[in-house]
Image (cartoon, rainbow, N blue to C red):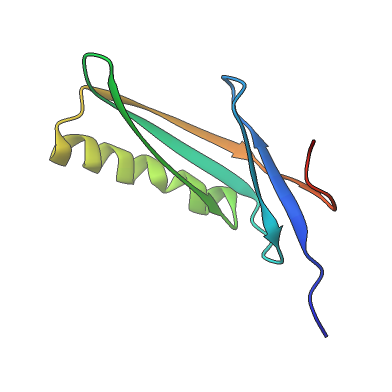
Length: 89
């Protein structure tokens, strides 16, 4: 039998909205790293995790990436995903 699919929506503190789906995988959190590379230059990395603990591991990854790649700074956001049966309008 096919698994029920749903949409996952993340609303970040800066108002950015990311929708994932349709998916049958129960992700619980969305993470985003905005790397500040220099004057007016950024790079964005994002993903989703099955638990808050898994998402929090990105803090360590961000620290290491910042050192290795010479980022001036970075912002890390972790937010809970909201499941819906239909995509947001």
